[in-house]
Image (tube, rainbow, N blue to C red; front, side):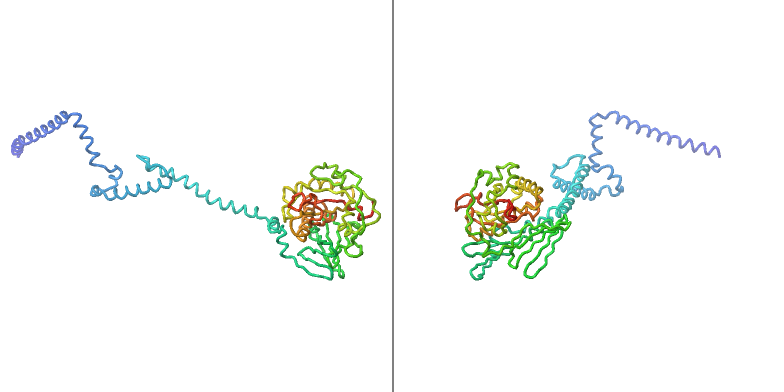
Length: 437
């Protein structure tokens, strides 16, 4: 048995030796071939793999070996990326990205877009919070209030009562009789400014209005059926009562004083008719407490003072040249209202000296327009100044009374438009009401 195995091994030895020799020969040929390659051939061999593999290594690893030749996924992804880049470029208006920055730039450019969205949403909310601050209830009456004579003219109604012609407006009455034309109005609305309470009651044909002031005092005004003021008193918190105006004169007509001569003026012109824009505070105060230039022999009614020029001229006056008006208007602009501060300061000082002082605020117009329009316009101008003195500067309304005179007393003698004739005058009338010099 052993002999057979040895004979079989000796027979196979040449075959195994020949195979081993052949393998050595192939290995030697490969070594020689690699040794004989030039550097150019080596570079060519290195470049060939990238040409055959255009896909990124990550994509080749994700694909199974049987699907490596399928290029549809790569073709579908590229247009989607390019389309996304183009949309981002159009939104941001930036030059197209390039190179490896494609996946980074869209992420960086999206951040400011997300930051702008809340800023746009916050703006309307901010505007809404401002709305109630700008549109306050206090400003709406000022905007809607009519301050021009054209609106009043259309409301005027004319009636005839015997030898009188009466023109009625919403809050005023114009009476024309015997060659004279006067205007009357109700002070109740002006007295409501700053009032704590208002009580109105009828007593026969008269109407009594009680205004309770913040300090507890009561201003009691009584008017007749035609709206004519009869009496005004002040009742103090301790019960004392002071007569401010007694208009109980019962003479014929309107109570005009016939035959009263014009006064003789013995004081300098600049102290008799004071221009407010030139006067210093001391001169304004001295005029607010000035005595009559004529001897007052008795007490006069308010109507006598209102409708008799020669009687009013017994008292020095102050022309408010700083306050003028547009044609047809009785509006006092805010910049002009501030110019009333020196007048108000002098008036407060005089009222502190005598709480019962009464000042007549006179309204005037130029000669442009009809007599009725100018009379109504001037009366409203006087009331506007009185309201500002009370509302803005704290002058009690019961220390003021108003009256309009239209174009009767021109400061500048002209029939044309003249701003200096559209003015207001302040005059102390306390000595005329009380009969005390």
